[in-house]
Every structure is written in C-alpha cells, then in structure tokens.
Length: 329
Ligand code: UFG
Image (tube, rainbow, N blue to C red; front, side, top):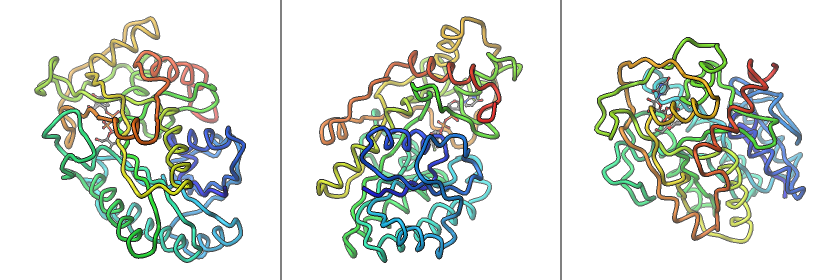
C-alpha cells in the first residue's frame, strides 16, 4: 500500500514509520515541516519537507505517489500552549487538517488513521475511561482533535472516507531497536524530564501539584509504550484495508501511575536518586487519566508488548543515555 504519514518525523510519527517499514509491505511517504520533528528520526521511506498549509504540495504528493491511505499525526500537541494560543491550534489541527482531507477526497485516497488524544474527554467522570465517556475537552488542544474526529465522521458519511481515530493516553518510552526515541524541544513531558535530571542536565524535576484527590496527591496517568502505540496504527490501517467501518479506539494500558511513582521507577531503573521539588499544579491537568482499551483489544486484537512501566522507562533510559543531546548527539 502507498501510505502518506504526516508528522512522521515526530516522536510518535517516527515510531509509526519504523513499524510500517518493518513489514516490508508498504511504500511510505513522510510529510513533515520539521518544526518539531527530526530528520534524523526517519529510518527510511521517502521524506518530503513541507506543510499541510501548502495545498498544491499536498495535491502533488497524492498524485505523484498514488497515495491510498494516510496516517495523520502532524499537529500541535501541548495543552498549556493551546490555552495561550488557540488560534494556532485550530489553524494547524483543524484548518490544515481539512486541506489533507480535501486532497484525500480529490485523489480518492480511501482511509485515514488519525492521532487523537485522551484530552478529548476533559475531566473524567468515570475511570477507566471508555470510548463512550462524554467528550468535553477542557482546552483548545483536545477540542481541536475532537473537532477533527467529527469532521472525519461527516466526510465518511458524504464521501465514504473511512477513518480510525486513536485516542492516545500518555505515550512514553523509546523504540526497542534503540535507534529512535523522544526528543521534544523544549521538553515538557514527565519521563524525559526526569531522565534529564538523571543525566545531570537538570537540577531537579518539579512535581506539578501535590494536592490532587489521588492516593499520594499527585496526578495519575496511563503510560503506553510508543512501540505499542505504533503497532496499533498498523492494525488500524490493516482493518481499514480489509473494509472495517470507521471507529475510534482508546490506547492505554489501563493502569495508572502517579507522578511520584514514575519518579521512583526512574530512580530504580537508573540506579541513582532523582532530586524532586514540589510545585504548583499545571493549569488544565486532570487528576486521573486511565484508559479502558478493551475495544481495540477485542476488535483489532491489539496486544501491548511493553506494558509494564519498568520496561517503558528502561527503553527511554537506554535511548537518552545513548543520545544525551537527543537527535544529533
Ligand atoms: N508533570 C510534572 N512535572 C513535569 C512535567 C509533568 O509533575 O515537569 C506531570 C504533569 O502535571 C502530569 C504528568 O506529569 O500530571 C504527565 O505530564 P506529561 O506532560 O508528561 O503528559 P500530559 O499528561 O500532560 O500529556 C499527555 C500528552 C498530551 C495530551 C495529554 C492529555 O502528551 O498530548 O496527555 O491530557 F494532550
């Protein structure tokens, strides 16, 4: 199959590209504007530097490469930034995404796997969160992703464009191949920040809020290994290719870990103490986000291989140790 991966040079994107290439069955074209992605994270495929705002580029890509399916991951994805700059989020995640859908319709590309988020649910009223949980995002990031899910449903109805939305919980870890990992600049995510402390690049990790209604007062999250996430994209593409109807799936391990538990796990893995300070809550953080992924387990046969937190942290540590300055180390 000829597959276009947007945002394929990003953290999750590069792991999805690795997974697609491993099968040997697909021709992979990667479109990324490299604002956040890294050229060095691409292990193969054909790379095109460009932006979804460029509709003529999009039309050229679809025509020249005879694109049949899309994995759409190009987006802005920081909750806090989205609250400050909703214009950026609605523009990049919705308007530019529409350019992609229109190019798909025009060139009769038949299906799309979309990277969505737990942020579509907002503050949970029940845990673990199933796909039927009310969707009430509390920030423009989650809202932009939910809008796009709804737009795709309308495109399916009108133009027969089938889609699977994958609502990620907390992506973490690094490829077991050791070749690619997480490198955000600036880094805002918990596990890489703690690893930077372990590497002596930061003095301490700040625990963002210690007065949540959780067993130890810190936020609880469901960490999912990025390679397990990537495998789910392949399953989703295969299901769509076999005629599956449009759908939405949560992706998490169904187990929550508090910020303190994650820091303790990193201490265990790296074998040294991690300096920590208690700080204020980060605006927009729900206390607990834990997924039920039963639907994708049952319907697509997804089986996470790296589900325990220790393995997730070990793979992340292996990559960070070998790449202390990220890509380009
Ligand atoms: N945290 C800290 N200190 C830090 C960084 C994070 O205590 O220095 C805490 C956060 O407050 C949060 C937890 O660690 O409770 C995890 O934070 P991350 O930034 O690693 O991840 P988020 O849960 O904020 O974000 C993830 C995805 C987003 C998605 C969001 C859904 O990265 O794309 O889940 O809520 F929108």
